[in-house]
Length: 86
Length: 219
Image (cartoon, rainbow over all chains, first blue to last red; front, side):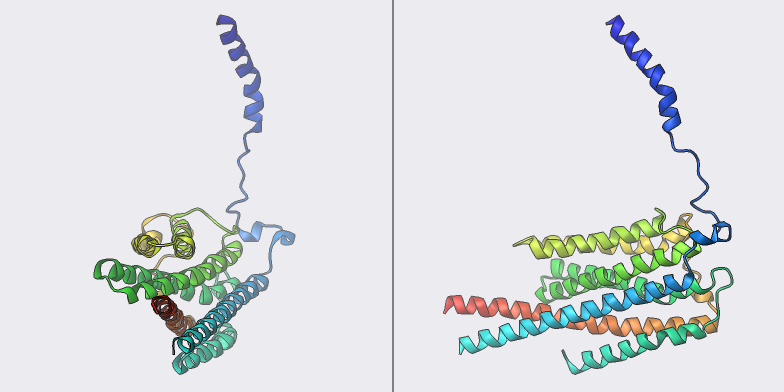
C-alpha cells in the first residue's frame, strides 16, 4: 500500500510540469481591435454584408417555395378526397 | 395562396429587393463603417424571431387552457417562422460581429439565450413531426417555455455585461438611419404576416385532410 502511494506521488510529481506546460497560454486574440489585426487576416466588410443579404434571400425564397409546394400538395389531396367522398 | 398573401409577398419582395439602395443612402456608422449595414436586416429579423415566439407561446396557451384546436395550428405556424427568422438572426449577427468585434460568437447572455430560444423551437418542430399522438400538448408546453425566454432575451443586454448593443440604440438613431431601418422592418413584417397566414392555412388544410380520411374510414 505504501509502495502504491509512493508510486502515485512520484507519477504526480513527474507529470505535473508536463501538465503545466500543456495548459493553454493566455492569448490576446479574442478582443483585439480590428485595426490591429494584420490586413491579410481581415475579411472585407462588403463580403460580410453581401453574405448576410444573400443569406436572407436564400432562406426567404427557399421557405416560400417549400410552403407553396406543401400548400399545393395539401389542396390537391383535399380535392382528391372530396371527389372520392361524392 | 390568397390574393392578399400574393400582394403581401410581392410587396415584401419588392421592398427587400430595393433595400440595398435604401440602406446605401443611410450614413455610415462612425466606428463600424460598412459592416454596420447588416443591422438593417439583422434587427428586423431578430424582432420577428421574438414576435413569432410570442405568437406561438400565446396560441399554445390558448390551445392548452382554452381547448381551442385552431390555436394549435397558429402555434405551429408561428413556431416554424420563429425557426426561419431565428436562423436569419443567428447567421447575420455573427457576420456583423466578425468585423465589429473581431470574433464570430461570444457566449454572452443575449447570444446564448437567443440560441436556446431557437433550439427550443427546432425541438418543438421535431416533436410535432415525429412525436406521434399527444405531441400537440407536449409541444404547447415547450412553446410556453419559449415564450418565457423572450423577456429574458430582450432585457439581457441591459442587465448583463455584453458586447451586444443595448435596447436604447434604436430610439436614439438619427432620422437618416431610422428611415431605412423602418423601411426594412415594414418589409420583414409584411413577409411575416403573409407567411404566418399561409402556414396557418396549411395547418387547416391538414386538419381537413384528417377529417376527410376519418369520414372515408367510417363510410
